[in-house]
Image (tube, rainbow, N blue to C red; front, side, top):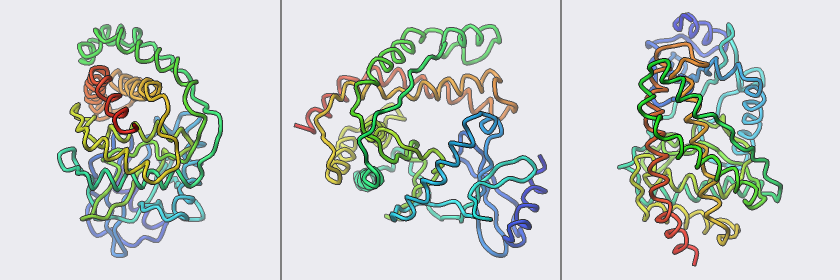
Length: 332
């Protein structure tokens, strides 16, 4: 696709003005592509949705659901960068390419070393506020994971892929994580709430002490305990395999100071149920092996994400007891 031609069509069709700067690719998106577009009428971010994602039979329904929930967050005053509506629609399409348009926000996401107790407290409170909007007693609809990691390991060896050396000796650990998660998902509290489902530090833009949430296309109804737990890990250094448990507890405390949810639940079940990284790993293994992937750029992202995700799996197993002890100390 000729991107310059595409963006010219886009600004003309939606009356966004004349492009006055070369479209700039913005780093950070691991699934979709993002571009900054500057016109004589304003500055915008355009998110080009991954065509391979859009081929999935569930994709359009998931995006439409997220678009509806996005309006609920907006009506409840949640600080976020919301997609713009044109012709009463958020998702747009030109020449088969689906995309969203946003107004530019001058903030930046934080790296692990920049995250402080203040940031954890603010996001912990924001998460509680989101969950409180429509918290309901409803049976969880978790699906058991059934990923054939042995098949992918053999395929990686057959294709002489660089990911083979990353995953060939992790089969037992991956299967153990998957199987234990499958056993506990039916034990979680039957609660659902609006969840962002991807609110790690890269998806919050800060401008001094103010912030806006971004990347709302994963919005849906999920178990609030699981999202709280996952985000407390992410915001305290888990993604760098170096959890700061002071930040971890700050996030937890800020959340529970702003919700009526019961703290005293089976957190070991939450620990095992928090294995969504396995699906992310499978997605990136496929990209690495050029399955549902059609560009070398995307393949390289996949290889890098396999490396990082495997490191997370190993680290998560190693720090289980320390995580659960800190939660136990916090909820006494």
